[in-house]
Image 1: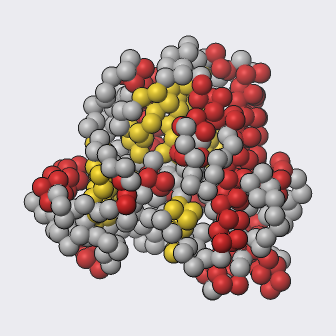
Image 2 (image 1 turned 30 degrees about the vertical axis):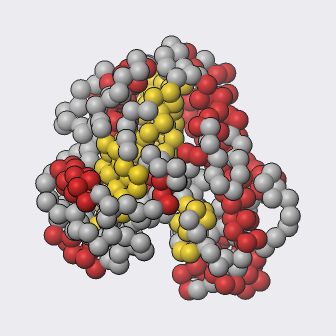
Image 3 (image 1 turned 120 degrees about the vertical axis):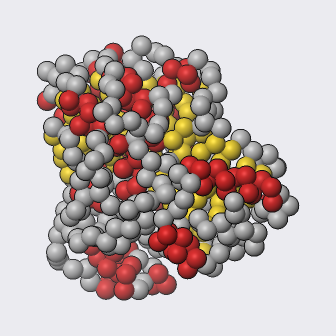
Length: 469
């Protein structure tokens, strides 16, 4: 059986209509993803293993846990010092592409996630063909012409301008100077090239295609007609995430940001639909499993914050969509609430291909159990991001620093789960959940990560309670 893995960067689960919810600013239209969901198994409790961009993909591409970031304080030439785990895939860990290629699969990667292709990175390892579509964000795709101050003022509000943000927007806009039509935008290019690959590789007995769309990640640059679906008024442009408090952000700028993001989600949906139609025409819906997911979401005014972070963690960032289409119709229209992490996707792909990995993976296949309505093997998930950890169970959402301080505990059974931190009221729960986080970390955190936690400021409203074992 062929397998296609599609990963959207920063796609919020509540923006996919099939999940029956909407972000607080209003409904986002995703007709093609919704139609895909009707023919697929819909997983309602899927989470990353570690975050952000590169740690997530390392776990997904290998099936191995990255948390708690042992030997992962990367300081490599050609890239900034990112979050813990922001580095290449270790040489001793085989990738999905390598394992499947060894068993006769033709493998390909088509992506515009430029972090995967920076100097010292190796996320294309094992693919028979890989294509890097350049120009996203700060990819040094072009060196000129530089923007004028008037152009900077158009793309970046004056109140958001500083040395870093100006440098960011300079590179972003330089990279896209020659866009003239919708097909020139990134998601369109990613899915068009993916469809071309399918057409050119019809002779493959079995193939594994990974499609990585950096959209709807910021900068939220989208054809105007998509933004106008959500905001017809002509207000100042705003495409950059401020990674901070939005309570004092001008309302029209926040609304414009939300409209741009919503428009970009709908744009991604439209070109995902194009790709699925190409599959239908090529007859590939009859012999191909298609998995659609995301690495994480993005806060856009939720609880007066814009950005993504691991502390305090939040559902709009941590909850990810996950849909699995089976060519024989297995699971079509069904939902499963078993706990799933990205490493389980890896295990499921290997299981579907009938491949036993040479090195064991940390995930387990979930598809058949989910189709049969079983509960699954997890009773919780642990997600690592930086010097913080998050544990999610049926009832609780627990978030603290890895030194056990700065605890946040939310009761998911409450009418407004995230309205009150109940850590002080439930010290035994705090200790129990921190013990789970420590166990999933293999019993200990790296010393450097603990020191990082101790230097990090506690989140507002956290408990002073130390969750130690």
